[in-house]
Image (cartoon, rainbow, N blue to C red; front, side, top):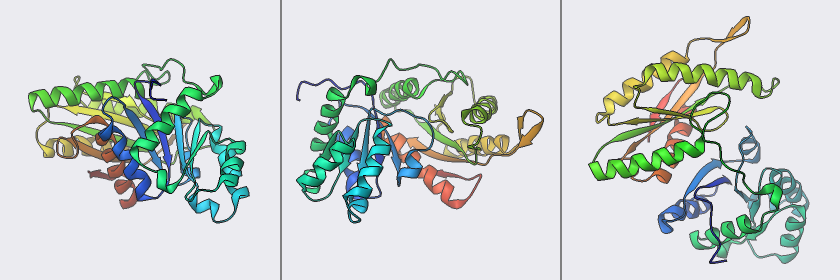
Length: 299
């Protein structure tokens, strides 16, 4: 599959808690500069299935489940594979288990001794090239239809350009990843869209016209703040955002509060490329959530 062309950006969901898995994922972009990945990490299937984001490839670590038998893993594969082409990580080589998982919906399987950035890249290329027509990506949206903000696809392009510009000009910028929590599930996407519209408006009032706000995931905003050289200034921006979003959100005749958290990565101190900046921002966001509600953490 050496000649298979990857999309310009591969949307990758990684469901695992294993450090070797994330190490291989981190090395993807470092080792193969022409390939670009937007990676979402989830510790478990429940967390991974939140929201309605689409993915080009899902990497699912089945090793914890396979200890309980293949049948349990098959059910998980079937549910997760409905969200996108799936690569199953299965630990040791077991051909009958591999065949069972593929019948359940896995597009490919990788074993422990195969898990490297190169083998993972090859599997991703193969899965994308051979995915059924219904699972192949359509033309990406440039703007989120409910908020009018830049889409995740467009933000990734903007972030890549910002990193190259900052490297050339020896400049500094910050990436803020904001997550709104406790959105009610019973009303589907409707309330979430309203909350994110209001959140986007409030965040935009805090920022400069030159800054960029994107709807990154269903309940997340990604914010690019360029040419702001002092960490103290970024901290002030984060504090203002948390303060603004701490106000009640109007929902018809009612008002509700939805806690937010922020993870912040800095160029070039946290990372010097777009892939790693996003990864560091996700790590910082996880740290902020661990501290409590209304918190922000620097990577």
